[in-house]
Length: 401
Image (tube, rainbow, N blue to C red; front, side, top):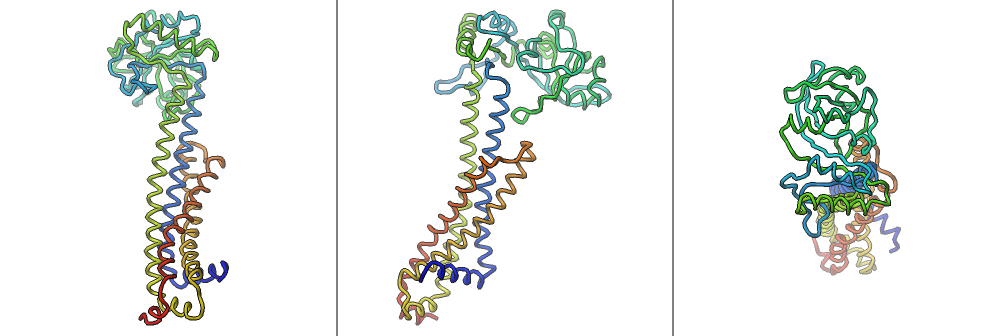
């Protein structure tokens, strides 16, 4: 028996038991679709998140409260907040430092224009405008005199201004109520978009000393530090560590470069993607068990057929090839259907959540791997039923009722 004859017999067997073949194929389809969809979504999310974070600038340093444990780059728990406004001012005196800005971040209810919403409030300094390369669309940003006099002024993100005042330009000069205190809107920023799934335009920026007073918090959530250039990153980091260690007397902080943060985040997202793929792979193995089960049933049902074929000269290899090809046909058909379904799901989810469909560079290797694995599942789980059929004694098979 040649290969094409075995394929023809396999397809004929599948057509004879259409419903059974469909249900068995469905198990493989779901498994392959799950692998492609979950791994593609995870990989696309990883690329998107890392790309967004890299867009903040290669010369950026993050100073976080808490000391990272040995073998870790970032602190797993912040613990007690220890960073201050004065720390940021001292750091700015470093020779390799261009700017430094403290960040005091919290969530509060904001009311304005007859509407109320919950937003992110950030206490900071004018330096943040240059560090983050923020662009003012209307009015102005925070000024040094706002900090010195602890003025209750606020700069709104584009989305927050639209939600409360409908037109961003109309927000300037109006009043916004935060924590029961009235703030004057002095500016509205240009849209920034999202970062790590967070809407950067749904924010309110107020002077750092004012935030300390209103929210009764003395310490910063973290510090942003900008090196003079990318070549000064290592030197800037050493200066930050030296200055803070001199001020705090204890290393209760962690300084991360942009590359370190990206590396940590990329490693976490890579592990998450692999975990999703492994979970989806289990469903594909379940589909393989279904193939083995249905092929054993098929061998039992066709015992007399096998006996007749052996009686007229079919060899062990012929019977083995016939049933092995049948198992692989089920797996391959399920794999093709699962590939189409998986591509559709991953395309729709990534386009909706991330704003862009997966790239061919991301999709092609995943599709190739999942389809190959589905065929391998058919081969592995089809071997035992095929071997069992091939070793049947022709005389005993002909007697089978």
